[in-house]
Image 1 (cartoon, rainbow, N blue to C red):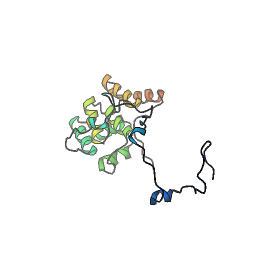
Image 2: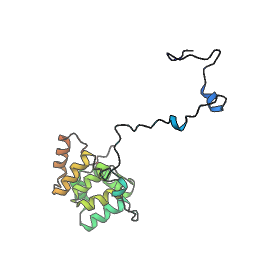
Image 3: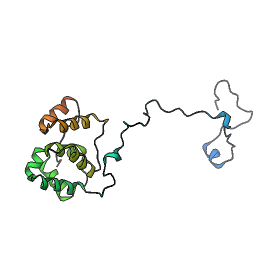
Image 4: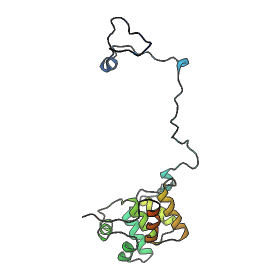
Length: 180
């Protein structure tokens, strides 16, 4: 067996096996408190501060759970929006929309929910509630989420134009397309 340079193996010593360590047949030296080495945090990790994203802050806030499907139907009724207008203006495939309304799709993809937020001309608060009903939230560190949020705040509700902007910024576009 090879030993690292500068260290000498004891005469007649056998290399330690993982099974020996697990069984306790080889004593393991525990470091003394004076030998403790501080653990260095990875440089990529960001310390927690008031700008750190916490998804739970944007979701339900302890309110009773309201399934996405029910929330979407409620919004369509309140805004008096026809189903055909809803899925076409949101760039959602008819089959995907039917699966959502029937309950076959419990929590749709984020791109689908964001498409509804823009296509149904929801306010920022309504958008956050719809996202929360699908267990999603605007992520302030996600470029696509920032762009869509800015479009909602500025009143830009044309999904086609929003998708052109997202495409130009190399981001995933909004909408849902059913795959046969």
